[in-house]
Amino acid sequence: MSEQARAPFGAFPTVHRAVDMRADLAAPVAAALESWSDREAAESVLHVDSDPAQADTAAFCAAYDVPPELSANCVVVAAKRGGETTLAGCLVLATTRLDVNQAVRRHLGARKASFAPTDTAVEATGMEYGGITPVGLPGAWPLLVDAAVAAAPHVLIGSGSRRGKLILPGWAVARLPGAEVLAGLATAPTTAPSAAEAD
Image 1 (tube, one colour):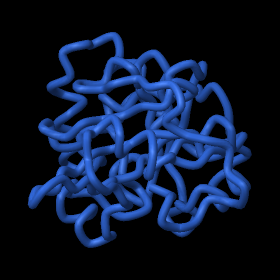
Image 2: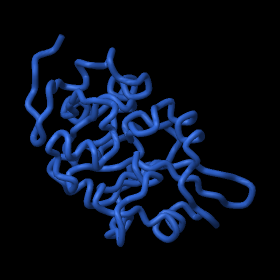
Image 3: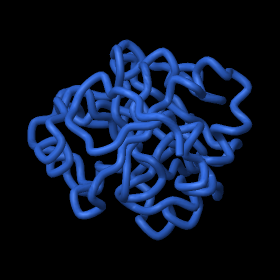
């Protein structure tokens, strides 16, 4: 077992470097950490243990004293053009709303873009719903990151399963393989994020 690390925020029972916890991570996440060529970024990722019943954003932030503005949700989007559908990952702060109909659709050159069905997201990522993370998404997928996420000192994201989360610096998110940092990917929500918008 690796030595305990210290999280930059929150109150967690255990905190470790994610690279030291690969045996406990979802397979795509563990593989991504191992193969990430930017070792500085990979080694900056922390894994915090948590109750899977508290995986949803609002419940998690309340249970573990996490500022919602430092939590980010990874949303799987289905973009359609002609007869083809492209899946993409989008990462936005939990206090904002992903602009699917305008920013995402235009950037992907799609006729229509929408949240991917839960079953599709789970099967395509190999991750649990409620824990989908940008670390370990299929390599061919576009990964769109809102500029506010990349600018954050640290953000909390899913770990690939409902148990546990990852914390990493915003600059490391921007260095994820295939990541594109975009201004205006998200807007301020007029209501609380819906379940479909959570990871």
